[in-house]
Length: 186
Image 1 (cartoon, rainbow, N blue to C red):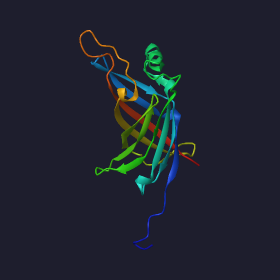
Image 2 (image 1 turned 90 degrees about the horizontal axis):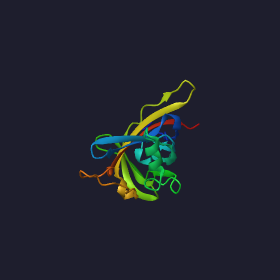
Image 3 (image 1 turned 180 degrees about the vertical axis):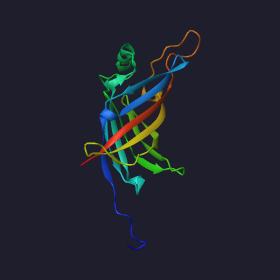
Image 4 (image 1 turned 60 degrees about the horizontal axis):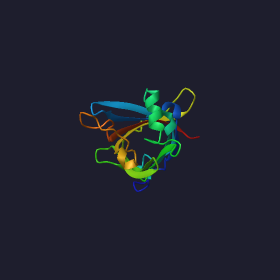
């Protein structure tokens, strides 16, 4: 092979394994402690080209009704029109528009994130993907951890209560972490 030959295409398609993936968040409660929650209904796919990362693409959807903050009363409130309004907006979605490798070697994935019917551009910092492994059933798997933070007010999630001592009940900055396990499509 000559030095001017290009590397063969190795683009692969992967699907999110919803049983081994979740979307987690944390937000300040009463300005003193973080409340954490997660969504277990995560689906989507990844088109991955390790030789030309900019040709990679990811899309994901989260079923808002799968929210779990370990408090059923709070979960019901979060599903209500005060917050996510699951009846009107049952999913949040992300579709990458740009995948880049940073000077540090880290991967950044940018694109529109839609929550509560509002779409805003966000950037996820990516850890991974891990090297592929074979599971006991012959499937090839990789893992990815993606993080970002948003201001929930930008998505119309404005419910809050002023505290008697100052401050508010629910923080505005929300930290999002996606723990995703992908299975290579056949």
